[in-house]
Length: 421
Ligand code: ATP
Ligand code: CA
Ligand code: CA
Image (tube, rainbow, N blue to C red; front, side, top):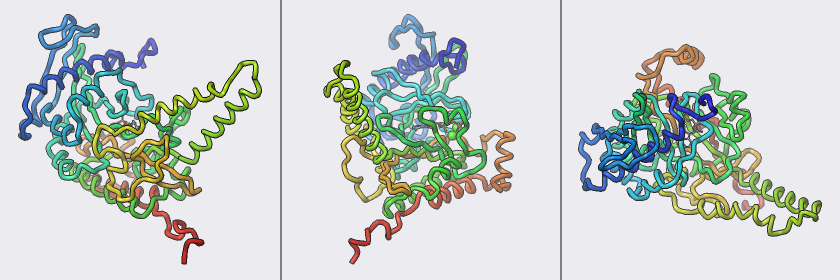
């Protein structure tokens, strides 16, 4: 946060970054239209296009009121191919990215990265470090070999890599899929790694309106874990195994499973108490003429949300349910719940919808900083043999997800005794 309370990144106002990158991306996508579709070549992963954006505009850039800047687009043809792989039309991508102001996420990680969300909720733009950007560039050919073979994955899907340059500062940005729908209330949110070392949300995180909790918090909140139908459980764990194998092959670690939980029963209770509240308000204060239609207003906003929630997602195979290739089709079509959440239950039997995906994968073991914290956590985790670290990380991650976080619904609970013959 800057001096005047304005959010800044590398001393550049966030609003300026947002506006400028929208100009940059608009130009980059527009420029692609003149390049015919063709098969990908290896060199497409290495190209970088640079454009100047002077105040007064130029032959191919618009005039603007931001500081003058340069905008670099990495591997434009390769990323077009990837977007195509996920069914994203150029016009739609342009609309998502550029037609409305971006929103800044209020819940970033500890690294100081800034996150922007597109207005239609489809994409997240994250600032990354130089090393991470470089790593993604190197990763691209191999990463997309995997995505091409298997687009159903919980791994992040990258749709663009850019660099905004202003006053000799570089702001590198990746565009990726958004995992958590913002139109649905997430009653709990977790960032899980399978480690227990310092994996607890701190005080300031807990004070946020929608905190992101960690592994130790999860074990405290869900001592028995979260229950899934057997098929769903198997599909989810299989997908994660496959994904972790890919990450391990690239020596990637420190990634997390981001899990957003919408509790359907809780939402029901909230709704009826809101209704009661509205009713008692109108009883208690007749002078205010709080009428039925006023109460309806309150729900009107929810109805509006529903319509946008239920529309088709832009990015193919990207909801949690699609990502894990589960056979079973979602539970009862709840009216005001977005499709694509994975149905589950907590230990109290309440119905949940899970929105999840693997995040923060641009940390390669080779690039990892040797911080004291890292060293301590290594000792604490009992993993002192450093060559094995990526595989150790993957194994511990999978173990935690398969045994502690997710559980199969015991068949004795699934079929109520009365139904059994
Ligand atoms: P650190 O390296 O300190 O962990 P970071 O800056 O690399 O932090 P991430 O771990 O990538 O940040 O993400 C931080 C938070 O941002 C997540 O806990 C989550 O709330 C949100 N977030 C990140 N990626 C996504 C995504 N693809 N969809 C939705 N939310 C996301
Ligand atoms: Ca992280
Ligand atoms: Ca990180």
